[in-house]
Length: 170
Image (cartoon, rainbow, N blue to C red; front, side, top):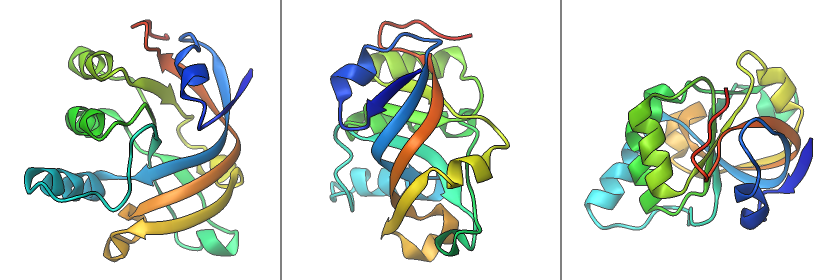
């Protein structure tokens, strides 16, 4: 397994599909409603609440009680959010973390945007919650668990499912 700093874009992009990765550092968590708002901002030429350039985005939202150490943060199904991949590419995202396979059009969008796809284990929200060392809401508080979050993670284990060479696993 490769331990990778979330800030080391070159190292992340060099990892081949099928490799387990333990992420360390900062990632951004968001879900459907935040992506809708980011799309609206882009359409109106307004800035995002956070610069997503060079960032890793986790499709997820924390459960209530997360700040008290009794919640979890599990991955959201990526296929449902695939329509936003071009938007995330426009914002400069380098990798996404989600759950489940993506269809050919989503893989094409990843390839065109030079974005890696890392898969997290479905049903492992408590596991991932224990690997988040800090969490801060950075936008859209009114959306609750679908707000925009800055997370710091340690030993956040995922698998490279689609690398920047266009290889996929499985």
